[in-house]
Each structure stands twice: as C-alpha cells, then as structure tokens.
Amino acid sequence: MAILTVLFGVAVSLQSAVNARLRSFVQSPFLTSLLSFAIGTVALLVLTAWRGELGLLSPSALVQLPLWTFAGGLLGLTFLTVNIVLFKKIGGVQTAVLPILGQLVMGALIDQFGWIYAPVSEMTASKAIGLLLVVCGVIVVTDLAFAAMKAKSDAPFIWKVVGVVAGMMSAVQATVNGHLGSILSSAVTAATISFLVGTLLLIVLVFVTKAPFANVRVALQAGPRYVWMWTGGLLGAFYVFGMAFAVPEIGAGQVIVFALFGQLLSSAIIEHFGLLGATKKRMTWQKVCALVVMLVGVMLVKL
Image (cartoon, rainbow, N blue to C red; front, top):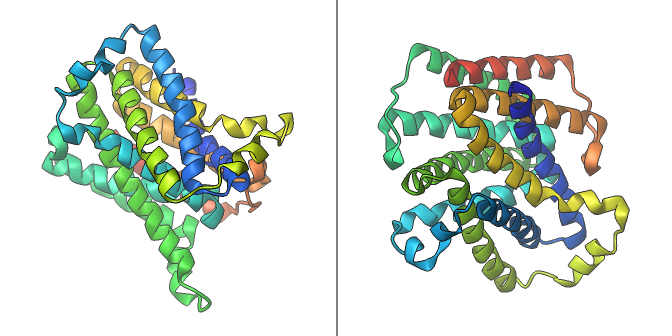
C-alpha cells in the first residue's frame, strides 16, 4: 500500500509535466486546463457510475448542497492552470515544492482554527519544527535567499510567491471537497462534482479569452510520439481516486507523507534528466539534502 500511495504523488508531478507539454501545442493555459479537466471529468464520471453513485449527481440532489461546497472546482482549475504556467517558469521541482509550502501553512491554519468545518488540531512543538524544516528546505531548493541579489528582474521571485499561494488554495480545495465528501458520504463523487464545476468554468474562460481552438488540431496531429501529453486528466483522476481509496486503508497522515515523497522524488528526476520536455537542471547534493530535510519536516507536521 505504501508503494501504491507513493505512485499517487508521482501522478501529481507527472501531470504538471504532461500538461506543460500539451500547452506547448495549444498555447493557451486555459485551453490546456480545459482539455485536462474534461478528460479527468469523463474518467471520474465512469468511476462514479461504476460505484453506482450517479444518483448523487442528479439536479435534485445537487440543489440541496450548500453553494460554497462547489468552490472546489474553481480552486482546482486555478491550481492546475497556475501549475501549467509555473512548470515553464520555475521548473518541475519548484512547481512541486512551493505549493507544498503553501499547503502546509494553510493546512496548519485550517487545523488551528477549524476553518471550513475542519476538526480543530492545535499547533504542537513537532508541527512547528516540521514547518520550520519545510521552510528551510524550500529556501535552499528554490534559492529564495538569493532572489533579492538578482538585479535583472524580480519576476522569478514573483512566480515563486504565486506557487506558494497556489498551494494554499489547494489546501482550501481539499478541505472544501473533504466536507462535501462527508455530506455525500463519497469522496469520489465529491471529486467528480469538483471536476464538473471546473470544466464548466473553464469552458466559459476559454471562450472569453478566445483561446485558439485551431491549435487543438495541431496537438492531435502531433502523432503517437506525443500521445502521452493527453494523459494529464487521467493522472489527476488517478490521484483523486487513489487518495479516496488509500486514506481509509492507512490513514490520511501516512497517505499525505508518502504521496508528497513520490511527488518530490519524481519532480527531481524529471528535472534532473529533462524528461517530458522539462528544462534540464541537474540536482546538487545541497538540494538533495534540502529535499530530505523537507521530507522530515512534512513527516513531523503530518504524523
């Protein structure tokens, strides 16, 4: 089960790389997100039907839900679109690491104050030490300490802040979807609703921004060599299903730790070897040690 849970984290980093390649063909980040969300939505609808839970998606059932519980779709599409942009701007490792920092910070705040109907879990010494270790790891991995010394432009630092904020939104999304899952007694159906909302909003954004639909044909004509760039939505659906499946088996704490480990490790490998079209950046021992420190910090916070 531990190895399987690590693969769920691997799916997250692979999704970022895959969607970044798809964007290189279709150009528009919104159109890229729409294609990914649509494919993931279809996959989740099939899974929901297989579980015999399509009745939870009926109009009569949906209108009974609090309106704010549909916010997960908006937060999810924002997080995915930002990740697509960040992958090209700051690389795979930082795209994975910075949102993790945001997730941990916002997660700690949600636990501390019991926001969005989350159970209260006050800050402890181990959690504080864990967060400190994660922050130190992020500083080393992303070179934040040297951002002020770069005279050319502060754009790289701005993109790193965006990555942290995106992670905070992801933590809020998880909490919203978690509460929605509690209402429906189905985490998978909650994820399906989130994907459906995201897809509908992206359709509007694509038309408002006049995204170049003609480029989709260019992507389709790329041939079998690039068939893998259409798997981003499936990877997202795999992650959502995997988390719903694994948490009841081994607990949320261990699932998060193993998934984050898989995400960090696979992101480092992708960037080190320049896989899936990523910019090739060899890892230094300094950054490897920082990733290990971050993993220890995550374990202290979550376990």
